[in-house]
Image (tube, rainbow, N blue to C red; front, side, top):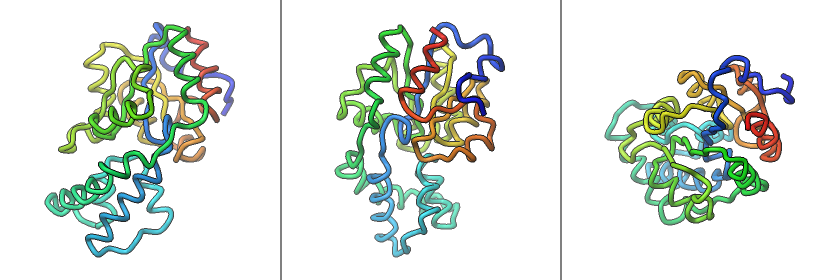
Length: 230
């Protein structure tokens, strides 16, 4: 894929102006893996389940936690999944949420985009209340015009649902920027292009397999590509 041209501009020529971008949070703005995985291990241990293998652990970075527990526990039982989520949050809220750090270059990226008059949103499968606490903690909230996520009950758990909700609230379409296949699929289901970042939790092959419109290997490259639509 030619990483020097945002191909989505050709596929979706009517949505690149005015400049609007929706950012994923985990794996795109912050490296939240330590807190998510430690909270997951805590919940599984409390439930008497062994620690999953490395690939299974990687797969939980991105989807809603309810979906991850359904797969890891091998169940669709709503009560069992809800209990696992409760145990997960017992560790995540006081500890795991802040076992997290902002990727190098993200603050500069957001600052440059705001200086260039971009409208910037967050669209994350993480509950909105947690996403806001994280951006507040790291001093990022000031960069965003709004933060859209799921509900604690699991409502809007799919990335496509979060993006659709954000579009309904703002009336503004634009680029989605994220690191996993869920970001690409969710964007395309809402007729938006997706710029995939390769420094997060997804892989190049994963992003390419779902038709990502373009890729960037660093926050600086994200900035350079998005600034073409100013």
